[in-house]
Length: 228
Image (cartoon, rainbow, N blue to C red; front, side):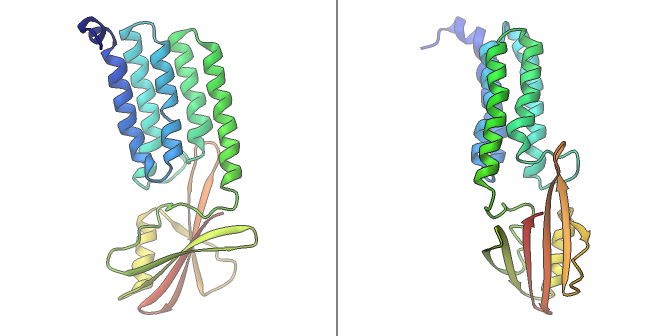
């Protein structure tokens, strides 16, 4: 059991961890493993900090960095300033290790291990998701006013997700839905029946998701999305 003196000395460590868990929880719906891995730099910093003042200042920087890598994706934002999910494993941990090294001026071995682990995990995640279908990627869930049936399709070493919809002005509603999620029109390989929309995320490595919109009738349409 902690004594009052220990609570007074170490309260900031608990506050940092609780705040980090709260931020990372926003990422857990889409990528639970990434959310857990994102907590490692904060936990490591709590073991390296030399004083409460130093711990809080650097800890706040780490929390801001964590929020930058997690929150925009949860808000379905896109653009070159929005980190891609895969960058949480290697870029976020590398930047966090640099911040910790500047703040602590010790623990080089553990910080190096963090960076190496980030790249190793990145390789493992890329391999495990090589032929996996994409996540929601801002497409799902679809518009509430439509009747929606989702499925997964695979072929030629790749998988995609499909959303078949019915309802009034189905294609128009889907088109507006994609546009609202920052998807922009893109060339559709010459097939006039397909409207293609794409959006990018990623600070250093671009993550492009494209959605192909098929219009069947005024009340029936489908969108397929995949990582390009």
